[in-house]
Length: 511
Image 1 (cartoon, rainbow, N blue to C red):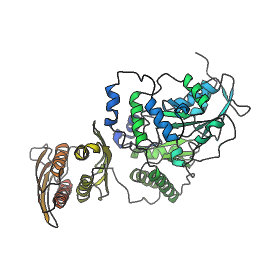
Image 2: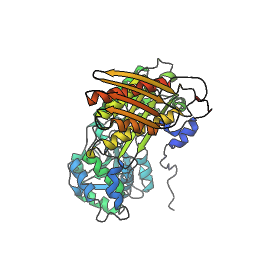
Image 3: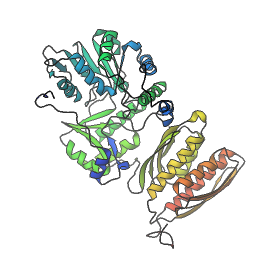
Image 4: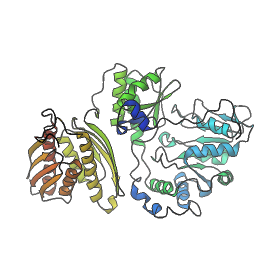
């Protein structure tokens, strides 16, 4: 093998979630990663059904290339298909540009250091050297990683501009590809497809053709291409994450920290105590990226970010915010994925009714929210399903996902009251419910009139949660009858979850 340059550093991945969990003494599902700069959940388009067509042909090569994906990228970027180069993530394209634009012995400039470490790795793998004097080309990251800043584009040409975070900045230099600029982008960040490894370069037609000649014959899998096409058909709205970035930064400032102004989906916090803070956060399942001079924190969502802010407050001996979802104790994270749906659950049994259910199933999202609120749970249930066929699969799997999470949170069910019952009147409707958390699934449910799926959703919850649920609900309005039923089940569940006698609540000595 050709000798690498003295001091060469290979790209270093962060530890796996399993490895971090072992170090923290936690279950891997309890680890919340703030070190990857990816969204907390995939897009709604990233569900198993999106892969069905590609899976049916997974035995075949992508003969003729990826015409559908290239065309979709070109439309999205406002360029022609001949300006597009595919790669296995932006990292693959960084390596491609280094070996294509520089020869052994050349000099390559890297702007705005500290910046993404793979630039230097790619240059040295190509046999070139990092420097500033008469470079063959320049690497530039906009917005910059790890600082999140958006600096002016250097005048140097040719220049390869890493724009993997450009959606959050709202600014691109893709309109300059005919001026010696090559733009690199990815589906890993805003599109939530980091595991699929899909990226693309935009360049003038001659440069793009030269890069394609040097690229691997099939640089992405057909499965990944299908996910990327689906994502481009329903692109993300990053405004909520940008707003959350600013809220997180304000929360960090309230703790006496000084995050840099960011235009990406993360914030960089300068501190000499990065290693200490990271070690303090890990036992709570929270993982940040430690870098020279500070820590980098990925923006997730309000609930996860509040977990981090509370843990940082404790570490810094500051008042702890109270408006947060607490998963400690009887709490779990859970994901349920089928060919039709993908649901993610964050559940705390000892909660305060902080609830959000967002699957797109309309009425049934509302009913599950009512159940959780009246059950005194903290619940976030998010995901997507094949709503084009109707709400059935999504509502059913949402209830199954919640039931599975409830079952896991209960563990061996020691120390609970076990039984609970409740009566709920709601205008014209009256509902009675009783539950047994003894571990044997059973459902005797009568909701009259039923808006369509209420009985089935409650039955699915009982099945997956290993609960016995008895419900009678009657009224003149189907919505009211169902809502009263779900509220009654929630209130009965609250009583059954309450602390009871120590040990197993059964004369058998086991459940």
